[in-house]
Each structure stands twice: as C-alpha cells, then as structure tokens.
Length: 236
Image 1: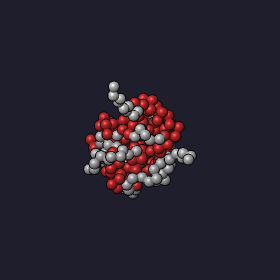
Image 2: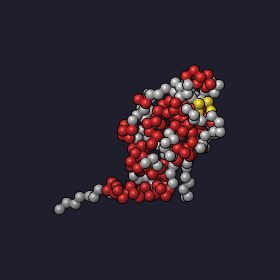
Image 3: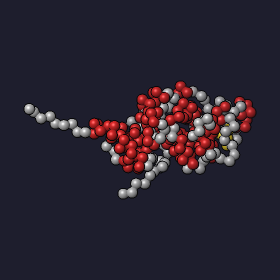
Image 4: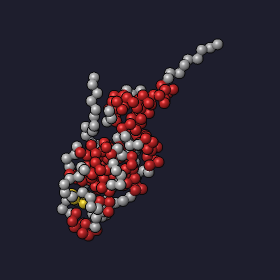
C-alpha cells in the first residue's frame, strides 16, 4: 500500500478533549494529565480557535503566556501550514500577531505572511472604546490583531516551565534535545513504542515516510540491545 502523508488532524479538539490536551502541553487547568501526549501544534491551533473564534479569552490568555515561555519548542513550519489552512481572519490575525511579537526569531517570517490585509479587532465593535480607555496590549501593539490592554490577563505561573514540561511530554523533551522538528516527535513516538513500523511513526507525527524510516534506523542502531530477546541459559 502506498504511503500517503497526513498534514493536519481531521478535526481540532474542543470541550473536555481540548482541556485535556491543553493540560498535556503544560496548561495548569483543573484536569488530570492525559495518558496520551497531544501533538503540540494541533493543540496550539485548537486553542487559538477556541480563544478568538469562540471568544474564550481565558484560554487565549493562557495560550499567549504558553507561547511566551515555549515558543522555541514549536515547529513553526508545521504551525504555519496549519494556519494557512484556516479561513477565519481572527485565527490568521492572531498567529501573524504572535509572529510580529516574536519577530526577533527568524522562523516567524513565514508565519507573519498569513496575516489578513487589514487589522482585525479581537472584540468586534468594542475594541475602539476599550483601547481609548486602556490602550493596546503591548504584546499586540501594531500587529494584525487589535487587543485592548487587560483583555488578556498575564499569569505565566499558570503554565508549566520548560523543565517540568520536558519531564511530562516526551516530544517536548526531544525537541529540546534536537530542535522542534518532525524528527524529534518521531524519536518520542519510537521511544514509547519501539515496535512501530516507519509508516506508523510517520502517520502519528504528520511526518514523511523517508524521515520516519531514517529515525527508526538510527534509533535501532542506538538501542539494539532493547530489541534483543534474552538468551536462555544452558546448564553445565
């Protein structure tokens, strides 16, 4: 059977599933840590949809705080592809604004290009009044998304730090070791289940089959002893 690469989830998480996934990438919410570790970019995009489209500003505030702490561990190439597939102006404006905020990171250039032609208000019809009274949120100043100050609370203590998250989320840990990439996610998947075939690894990480095959090969070279069956002892 020919391998067909999957680039995005069939649907983005909402409700209790989204809450669980957010906890899984380090949001301090009232839910247990999930058994299955969520994909980071899938969860970030789902959170942005929840925040700007469904107007859950609590989730949006936590998302912005998470990005401030962990943006270095995000696969920006994949995130950009996911954002490009969204039709909502608010979603595109949000992510382009994050790119503007973090513009010292050269990876953000492509993400910034997803911006709509004109600036968009986070709160349609109410942003002018709020901005006149309170000013703009400095993180979004002169960005594609207009956000009034104090609309999104800033509480980084509600987000797990890098050390703690690396202990709980294996893909995050591998991204810390070798950089935010499909390859890092594949190492995490194989580490959890060494018997997976290359095509299964690729499917679970949205990666390509050739990359998955190489990671599987490299992992086997370094961990061949884990795959050997124990030899039976013979009596003398």
